[in-house]
Structure formats: C-alpha cells, structure tokens
Amino acid sequence: MKIIVYCQHVLGVGHFFRTLEILKALDAHDIVLVTGGDLLPASLPGHVRQVCLPGLMMDERFSRLYSVDSGQGVEDVKKERQQILAQLVLTERPDLFLVELYPFGRKAFRFELDPVLSLIAKEATLDCRVVCSLRDILVEKEDARSHETRVVNTLNRWFDAVLIHSDPRLIRLDTSFSRIHEIRVPMLYTGFITPLPDPVTVGKVRPALGIGPDQFLVVASAGGGTVGVTLLQAALLAHGLLPNRRKVRMIVLTGPYMEKKSVSGLCSLAGEGVMVEPFWTDFISLVAAADLSISMAGYNTCMNLVAAGVPSLVWPFDQNREQRVRAIALAGFADITLLEAESLLPGVLAGIIRDRLATGKKQIPGGLDLGGARAVSNWIGESALGGRP
Image (tube, rainbow, N blue to C red):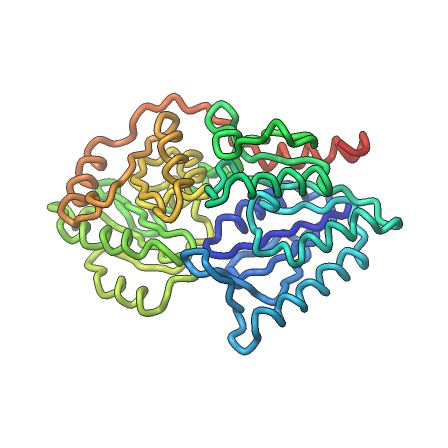
C-alpha cells in the first residue's frame, strides 16, 4: 500500500517523533512522509521517502506563523506549499492519506490541507482513504464551540477514520473534545505510542558514559528546546547545590531549537560532572539507564518515561493545560512527580532531587497500553484487506 503521511510540527518535536514511531511500524508499505517544519536530526527508515515542504513554524505563544527561510514571505511559502502538496497527491496516487492532528489542530494549515482533502474527495481517478492520527489530549481553544463545529464538519465531510493514540482507561478523547458523539466516522483507540527500551542497549549506556555503580545519572531535557530553558537552568543550579554532587552525573539536553544564547548560558552553568548536549539520538535508552529524569510533560517525553520506568520530575508547559492534565493522569501509572513554579527554586529543586535519588524507584502498578504504533499498522493492514473502514 502507498501511504502519504502529513506531519507538520510548529514548535516542539513531539509530533514528528510520534509519527516516526508509526512509520517504523508501517514497514510493509511504501511511505511518503510530508513535513513542513524546521529540519530535525532524525534518521528515517529505508521504506520512507521524505518530501520537505518550504518550512513554516510558530512562535512559542502560537500567535503567528513565520517562514524558516527568512528571505521568503509567509504568503509566498503558503502558495508554494499548496501547489507541492496537491501535485504530490496526483503524482503518487496514494491508497491512504494519514494526517497528523488535523482537523483537531493545525488550523493555521487549512490553506493547504482543505484543498488537498477536497481534491482527494472529488478526483474520480483517486481511490484514497483519509485518516486522522491524533494524540491523547487536545489544546483548549478560545472559541470552543466554533472550533468543535469546524472539526466535526471537516471529519464527517472528508475523513474515513480517526486513530486516537491513547489508552482509554487513562485518557479519553471526550475529556478535551465535548462533541465526540457528532463524529460519524469510526474512531479507534490505538494505545499510546512510544519506543520501548532494549535491555541490552540500556545496559551499555552507563559504562559508555563512565558512570560507576556508586554514582547516579540524572537526565534533564527540554524536548525541542523552544521552551524549557527555565527548567534546565533550575536543574543545573540545583545540581551545584547537591551535597553529593560529585556522585551525581547530569546530562542536559537542550533540544535542537533552543536559541544559541540560551544554550551558551546553560553551558556556563554546567559544573563538574555535567554534560550539555543539543540532542540524544537514543533518548529512550538514556532515560531507561538513568536514576532520575527531569523534563517537560509533553506526550512523547511522558510516554518515554513510562516505557523506561524511570523516576521522573515533570514541569508542565503553562501555555495551555494539555501537559498538566496528562501529567496528573499519569501520576498513578508511573513514577512521576509534578513540579510547580516554586519547585524550580534551586534550593528547593536540589532537595527534591536529593530525596528522589535516595528513594529510588517506586512500585507502580503500570499496565498502560504502549503498543499504539503496532496497532496503527495492524488496523491499516486489516482495513486494506477489508476495504474502507
């Protein structure tokens, strides 16, 4: 089966890497991945071809789009992207068009998505199903009624199914979308999506880093790095206040999008036993080998933490309530502790880190469904055999 997968990241990297896990599971298919954000340091599987649309990203308050190429205006980029996407569909003639998040989010990209969805519906020579790939919790909207009306109408008009990447025992879509009963297309909960740590690989991490059996490893990360510098500053300052800091190795991951000035500032705070890196290719193995993780509470990071079983301190992004809702829900299924604003005072955070390292891993019931990527692959294979869902 030929599948076009549309994934537009605008601020962080979670949407891209969640989609990448799905692509890995779709190894029996011919995949064309369409991306439209800034380039990321990631290797694609051999069965995936990437088409990079001229880049558009958003500022951290989600208030405006800007062109990755500063020499090209946003409106010109929009026109070029619209043409490329439409021509790609006509040329590749996919059996499935998998759209990440839209129409539940990415309203700013209606300029290219609505025309291509209309093209798929109207072009008689195309026999292509359209499916939405959706995370667990949606960001709240100012005009919720108007937003949900548009979502429902778009789904019922152009889509064939919605795949929800959550375990409904923990988080259901109707906790952040009130009109789910008006959606007429099939909806499937796939389970959460995350890579799973390989014990052999995990076992090699600490020796490779020169971490002895009497030392601790703390990993502090900020996702893409567009936001999160405050958390990493606090972690570095707290490390310097630990009474046993010579025994606590810390790896700080700034993310590929953090401003150079902020990265330099973090490097200046790094004392003995601290490593500051922009990115770690095998993040799941790193955190699985750690004694403690300090991070934001985005979907991908949280699922990595659950899969790794590592004690974790998470600081939810305060621009919207999505990360806080997820972190609170997960606290009963994973060794996760929420950090509040006052927790980031260096002395306070140092005390929290000290106590969590002394406590070790808590006994957590667990049991969440983390097999979302394989479930997506199975559903696509079964629906292909049985026709339209």
